[in-house]
Structures are given as C-alpha cells and as structure tokens.
Length: 469
Ligand SMILES: Nc1ncnc2c1ncn2[C@@H]1O[C@H](COP(=O)(O)OP(=O)(O)OP(=O)(O)O)[C@@H](O)[C@H]1O
Ligand SMILES: [Mg+2]
Image (cartoon, rainbow, N blue to C red; front, side, top):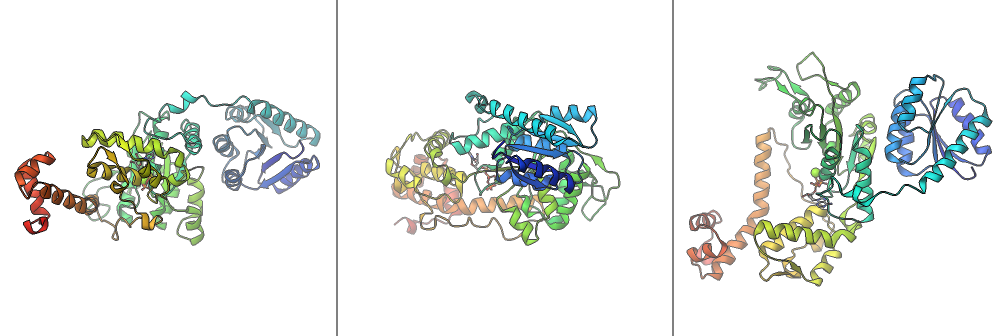
C-alpha cells in the first residue's frame, strides 16, 4: 500500500482522522474531506487510487458521491463505510459500482485488509480496460477530429450519457459545447424524448423565468394565456441551459430551488409540478471566478458542476486541423455548388500558426468565405481573411441591449447576420458587375441569379455606375 493515494469523505471528523491515521501508518498518502462537493472538486484536479466514503452526510449523499466519481474516474475503486448498514443500501451501493461495503465501527486491521484487496483488484483490472475503437464512433457522427484531446471528450460523453447526472460544459466560444450537449442526449436513454435548449443570454430576467418555469394566465401584464415552462416541455428529456453564467442572481435562486426540489411552480401558480429532466449547462466563462466575484451562487455552481466537461480550444488540438479543413471544404463544396477540393500548403501552414480565437466556428466561417470568393479551384493564402493582426482578439459582443422578446431577439440576430454579410455581399456584387462591364443581365447570369433579384440587391446596396469604375 506504499505511496497509494487515498481520498476520504466523511462528515464525522473523528472517523475521518481515525482512518487517516490508520492508513498513514501504512504509508498511504491521504486527503480527507468533510463533504462530497469538496471531494468531487478535488477529484477533478487530481487522480487517486481509492476513495473511502461515508453514506449519510448532509448535502451530497454518499450515493451521489459514488455516482459522480464513477463518471469522473470510472476505474477508481470506492469503499462505502456507514453506521446504518442495511442489505438494501449495500445492494444499491454495489450496483452503483462500490467495490466494498463496511459497517462502522470496524477493526483497523480488517479495514486495511479490505483496502489492500480493493487496490490489488483495481490494478489487475486497469490492465484490461482499453476502449474499443468502433465503440467511440457511434453517436458521434457530427464530431470531426480524433486527437487525444477529443478522444477524452468522446469517452467522457459515453460515460455520462447513460446517467442522469448534471453536466457542466465549459470551453471558449465555438469549441463545440452545444454539439457535446446534443451528443450526450443522443447517446442517452432519453434520446427519444425532447432535447430543449435555451440561451440564457437572450432574454430579460422576467422573460427568462417565464420561459423556464412557465406562468399562469394573468400572472403579469401580457400573460394573456397560461404557458408551460421549458422544464415542463423538456419533461422526460434533456434541458440545455446555454450561457448559464448570464442568469441573474434572483433567477439563480429560483433555479437552484427547482433543481433541489425536482419540481417547478409556474409564475403566479401555487401548484408545484414534478419534473424529470436531465440538465446540461454550458458557459464560456470561468464560473469559479464569477462565484468569487459574487455574481454566481456557489451552491448553484456546485449543483451544476457535478460532471464537468472542458472543451479544448482548437489551438490546443491542431492535430485535428487538416481533417476539419477537409470536412468543411467538402461541406461547402456541396452547399455552394462549387467544386473546390484543394487548399495550398502555404494556406494550411498559415492556419496552423493561427490562434483561432473563435475556434471551430471561426474555422468554419473562414472556409465558407474562402469557398465563396475563391477564383481557381484551389484555396490560397489570399482567399483566407484571417484576423491575423489580432489573433487573440475578443469576439465582438453579440448585442449591447437585452432583447425584450423572442421576436426582438430574432430581429437582432437577423441584423447581426446582415451586418456580417453585407460587406461580403457588396464586394460580391461589385466584382460581378465589373467582370461584366456593368451589364446587369450578364452579371446576374454569371452568378446564377434571376435578373430581378440581382437588381434588387444592387439597389439595396446602393451600387451605382460610379462604383464600378
Ligand atoms: N469537433 C467538431 N467537429 C465538427 N464540427 C464541430 C466540432 N465542434 C464544433 N463544431 C462546429 O462548430 C460550430 C460551433 O459549435 P457549437 O455551437 O457547438 O460551439 P459552442 O461552444 O456552443 O459556441 P458558443 O460558445 O459560441 O455558443 C458548429 O457549427 C459545430 O457544428
Ligand atoms: Mg453555444
């Protein structure tokens, strides 16, 4: 047992210290925690050889600890100790994957024997657990990339999918958080039930609450009809709370209550409705820092951060870059109807040295743009409009004002899209007109558009003869 790392969770300090002493006398490295949340947090940072946990604890129970650890570190042996030993709990603990179950009080020698046995068995098992490759590909059709970093993510998705544990997905913008949330749902037993996503940035506080929890008719001005909240709509399925860091403190308190009670009371209602959802949350912020700054509730953070999945930025998995480029070129070839299958080495090298602040989404947009404007059938450096001067530039904020309704949100998104597309559209029109000496009919024909539509675009952009000189 020399040098083995053992983690102990027990709310009873006497027991904790007793076990610690016994194990340290046998040269184990022991860390002890008084509650499950802290232990889980520690397990996210470091690996251990074995966990000993009490069953009955305030806050997170031993069963919850057990279930979470099974996902975080599936191969770690867990031993349950309890003062309330019953056959039923023993059976449940074993089913959840505990390797042993001990009733308190116990004799130190007997305890150490059981620990040693569990450690030996786990070592033997470790040599046999290799994942089959074809297992990895099922349910992951939308993911491209086979780097070690992504393999780790696929594995994690497969481990959490069969459970109902809450998952917190973190990662920079455009790293694929939503894709992961959908994959978890698709691989889960809930796959035939709804997957409901809500972007928590998009709505003002009262609207977000009414979206999430629902409301009864007349509960506030404008509530002309009763409405089921998304917790209800997603019943039996998965609810995805995107950009969860943007929820106000008041709404956070309500959300926490819903998650604790597993029931939701619509605004203005009196009757709580039981809910059965699997919750997945995502954020591109460091929630821990927001907790420290006082803008995110610590207890809610703990509730959400049961199973963390942290997506690596694209710059840290450049091994996937070539296959991603290929994938997007193929996709836009089909979508745009332009047969461009080649990209120059210099262009690939440029991309390899680029930092991709917007990650996969940025790569996707970049390739799409290049495919629209490329003139030969090979993408060259000139076709790539990189944000090269400011490789680490923050993406521009989506909007400065919070929309007051879903329609307003749609309108804002449309305007944003337009703003992004307009300069491109303009350049596209001007180029086509120049190539055809200002002849609208021929220019329209060349780009494959109806003359009237093409003309309407010219008018919208205010393109006049002078511009073409
Ligand atoms: N591994 C991948 N393989 C292929 N496409 C991917 C991969 N990861 C992400 N994408 C694509 O990149 C785009 C961004 O992904 P997604 O919306 O899931 O990111 P996100 O992390 O939720 O971003 P944001 O923080 O901006 O909301 C999507 O079009 C998605 O299909
Ligand atoms: Mg997203």
